[in-house]
Structure formats: structure tokens, C-alpha cells
Image (cartoon, rainbow, N blue to C red; front, side, top):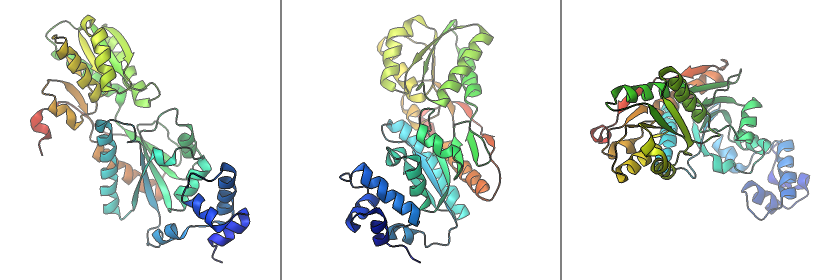
Length: 332
């Protein structure tokens, strides 16, 4: 028996037009009505016509790539877009539909509502990029194990979940060691400008800087830069004169730090992390860790397919390079 929108309206005790408004997420519908309609949709296993049409392909399951470009800088959005491009490329090769979604599209939804939204689009696997430790609803979505999950830079592993990314602690140690070794001046004190405090990659990169400080015996000052170029500039203006080297948990913050040093007419070595294109336009000599985000997206898609075929979750470490990004490197 085919379930219609009228069946849903009858079960929920509302008008057909109200069901349509809930499906299309009109803002004028009360939370109580939304809950009743969604409950009826779930109980009747109703799939809206627009979604049902999209499921008429022969594809047995889709993969959603969920990223967070909203509220980010252009540089951060570049990273997220490369993840998506890589996943789409690998998906085309494997004949798997890849559906890009953004965290903002799921904002305010319960985990049950997100599950339903993904299920009606025939999504069987999720690639999550930019997931932070305080994103409780999305973390709960992963832990419920309804989907096959591939997490970029988040160290969760279970039967249905794999993670993928570079060894951030080791990469931070390597790039900082390289910067200290190449420095011809003093290297007794390092100012480390970290990213967001709720970020796993921040925790790992800070850990790497601390471990190297213990190994080499330099004084380490850590200040939260929130992955912000502006904040990194302000921090460097305040602390930069009293430190020999400035290490940053992202390239964007490294650019802000170098701008501050230039404004103060002093020179200290600066290193970043990520290898974004924008680094090539600064005209400054800065070390950084280059990650191939597009290849990570490709590998994440292949891992999602592996999980969808019945394999169990695992942790995958991908390579990185220590580089100077030059202007010539970013020319098309």
C-alpha cells in the first residue's frame, strides 16, 4: 500500500497543507505540530514525492558529505570544498551518488529528525568533516550506528565507524622542529597560537608542540587564536616581541602573525599548518604542513564504500609534507 500525504495528515490530525509546510520546513509551524507530523511520517514510513523521485535510480545507497563552511573564512571553506570535490570524484568512479550537506542545514534538528532526513534520501553512509567535540547531536548520530560513518580528523572507531586524517601531533612536532632547526637566531622561546579549544585537531597539535618543548627544552607560551587571522595578529602584537619563534595551528593564523611582525618591523620565524593556497600569496618565507584535502576526500569515500560492503571500522593515517609554499606553487 502506497502511503500518501493525506494519510500523514489524517494520522497527525492536521491539514494536508500543514504536512507540506512541515516537509518544506516553513518557519510558521509550531513545534508541537512539527513533532506530530514527523511522528506520523516516521510511523507510516512516508517518503515525499520529490524525494521518492530521487530514489528511483538503481543506486543501492548514497553517501552524504557533511561539512561546515558557514561562518568560516574563505581559507577554511577552501578546505571543505576540496573534501567534497575529492569525495565526488571518487564517488563518480565507484558509481556512488555523493550528496553534499552543511551543518547549518541540520541546525536545530534532533538526532531522530536528522536520521529521517538522511534515510528518505537513501543515504547509507556519512562522511563528516569538521566535527568538533561539542557537537553533541552529530556525535550522537554517529554513536547510534544507523549509518556507516567516516570521520575526518575525529578519532572515533567502532564496527560502523572509521576515521581518517594525518597524525596532527607528529606533524606539528615535525614542522616546529624544522622551523627551529633552520632558524639562525635564538630559539629559546616559542609562542604557539592554537585553534579552537573544542577542536580535536587543536588538542593534538598543542600536544605535539608540548612534547617537542619537553624534548628540546624551549619555553612554550600557548594562546588561543580560534583559527582567526585577526586574533592571531592581535596575539602577536601583544606577545610577539618576547618570543623567538611563532608557531600557529593554521596557515590563516600564521598569515595574521606574520602581518603583525611586519607591522612591528621585526622578524621572527613563523610556521603554519594545512598548506592552503592563500599562503602562496603572502610573499613570506613560512614553513607549513601541507595536507592534500582532495585526496583525503577521495580516500574517505572509498572507506565509506568499504564499510557499506560489510567491512568494519578502522583508523587511517594519511601522509603529509613539510613545505615552503611559494607563489609559483599556486599558479594555475
